[in-house]
Amino acid sequence: MLRIAHELLRIAQILCAAETLDKGRIQKFRKDFLTLMKNAKIVSNYEQAVEWAKGMQRWRKHFEDYTFRYVLDSLKKLQYKKVITKDQYTIWDDHLRTPLWDLVINLSVPIDYTNQHISKDMAFQRFENELPSWERSVRRYSRKAWKALDEFVEWHQSLDEGEFEVNTPTTEQFNIEGFPVILMSRPDSYVKPKEAMAKLKKALSIVKAGASKYAPILLRMKIPIVVDLLNLSLDTGGEYQQGKVFLYGGPMTRNPKEIASVIAHELAHAVYAKHISGKGSDLWHKHISGNFGTLDLRDVLKKYGNEQDFFDNAKIKKKDPVLYLQLMGLINDPAYKNTFQNILSMDNLREYLEGGGEPKVSVNKKPVSGYGQKNSMEAFTEAMSLLTTYGPRALHPETMYVLKMIL
Ligand SMILES: [Zn+2]
Image 1 (cartoon, rainbow, N blue to C red):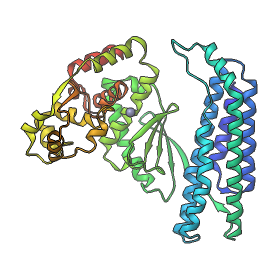
Image 2: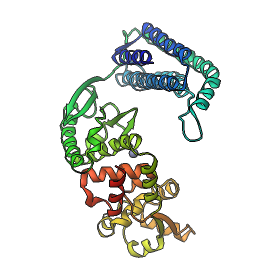
Image 3: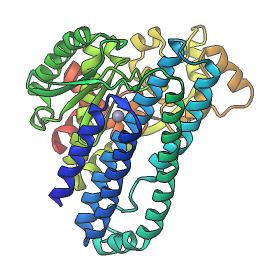
Image 4: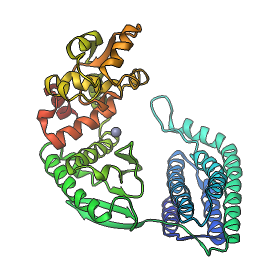
């Protein structure tokens, strides 16, 4: 199936280099898409189906980036430049967004990953059964998407403003401190590429120094780091997906040490996905889930009731670091998140308890970090991040012991 993978890569590259959107470009999209769909016909076993699904996934990511980020972003720019009115912007943004999104979300190929309950044969059989209806629906959605894009281009031509320019990013490759780095930027990026790269260099030298001492596996994997300055992403620091670490523009405004901890966290996702399995992951899960105990919020109120903030309280952080992490864990724990996102101050906590709210909550007795309370995997990536950026003193000795055993 190498042929498919190469073809997909070629298509992906063409997509990223596109500078204008016209009928020819849409025709090209349609042709490439049909070529990919035809490849389903030569899939004859589970491994090939997985390979094909991965290729489709990659195409989907590029199509999504091109349309949602670059085309719609360029449309918004026309409004800023007052080439079009706000109403025109809203109408066309809407007109494109719905069919494009329908296509993107329906593009994921119906193939299951195997586990102890699902064998390769079972997964492949299911794939074969579901493929025809999947193909029908994807083709239907694709026709709607091409139609909307065609209509958009026709409308834009009628404005007589020349071609519709799509602001795709410039992609550059570097090797920094031994890490392969891909920088996606534009001269008008909110965070300037030069500034971002200077900070990244500092951050990567922190990661390199800490990882070579305490977690060399983070360096051995040679995971590419994509710095995407076009995506501000204020809510997520970074992401690990499709074998790459993505760092976004928003987090690049922080200091190098904070950036280093985001990078180490995301690199650790790669370690968790590729190296921690079977016994190791069982052991880790037991360590994290076996440490839960009860925290009585009335005690918190008794001790810190005069304080202002419930979360991220500097005094608690200093005096009671474990309690601090436990409280931070409450907004990340899926079981409590909805309750505690409304309890921001000690006054809110008082109202909650007086209103009959449950005073006893389950917390980790040896918490790794607030975010680590989300699940075992995030506890692992947080532990690796703390270890890399702050050394073993940032972890409970027992956590350190288990980490050493499974790495
Ligand atoms: Zn994570």
